Length: 127
Image (cartoon, rainbow, N blue to C red; front, side, top):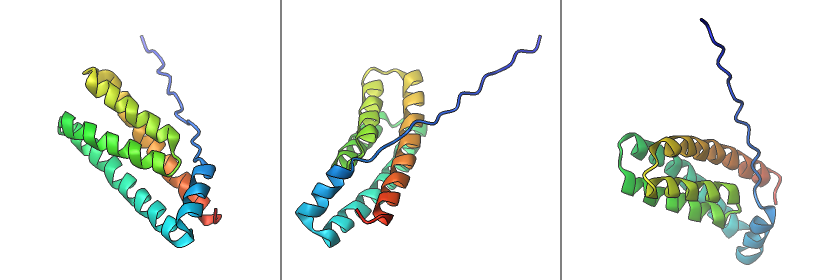
């Protein structure tokens, strides 16, 4: 008996809070704000990859710290959905829910990649 397997499209929209970025630019000036945003983007990309690596190595406490850092950086540059999902990763770790952790970590990476693309596109439009 052959059964069909449904493949679910995982296409969740992300949105960067342009107002938060505008505030950052207003407070720091264009050059300094651009430096902050660029460093944040680099750091988020590194930490997302690192968090995945820690997951594969079963290094839960370090993974928790990395997810917490992702959330803090994401909030700073207006990536609220990414910050929320990072907190969800921490909740899965705290509740020792390995099945949910695998799913939420995959979501964190997807949202992270899309958020980085979104903020890059906003940068190109010169906020």
